[in-house]
Length: 197
Image 1 (tube, rainbow, N blue to C red):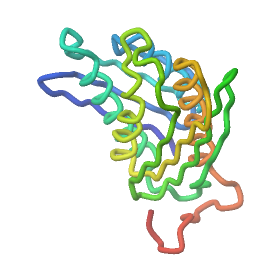
Image 2: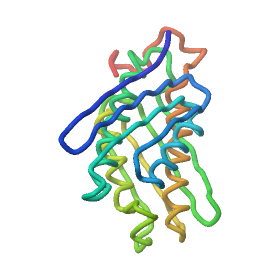
Image 3: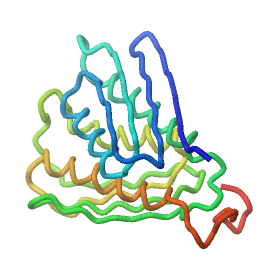
Image 4: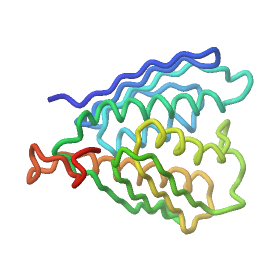
């Protein structure tokens, strides 16, 4: 059974196409018009071993907010679609990733209940190219809302804004990979005592 999600989302502000294959090899094709965001989504696909296509056209003449937000919403919806009935998956995943002086700890529960806990160092550089660093939390909020997962992201320390953000995406990729992988000991079993996820 293929685990593929495809979402097209069009508003007056953006046009977004996201395709994700949870059982891929990390092949990515990313184009949002925001270079650093493209780099982060590439990390998500490659380290999650998800085949990921993202094509977004947005109102970048205003700023990058709508483009980044709407892409994250579509990505979350595509991820949820690709999970299907969640039968036989591990459900929980966590990963800690260092990037030079920075460290990110990510834990995920594919619970069906959206919840985000997010902490990162204060007083980071405000911009990385055209990427506003305050958007990292908003990306996660948007993704969580549509994917319907519980996500805890903690960066206990770091100095370089690029490193702080990038290690979050790498750790998120691995945690999502581990949580969404099929558990050979739980074939045909939904990982919930409630009988629903």
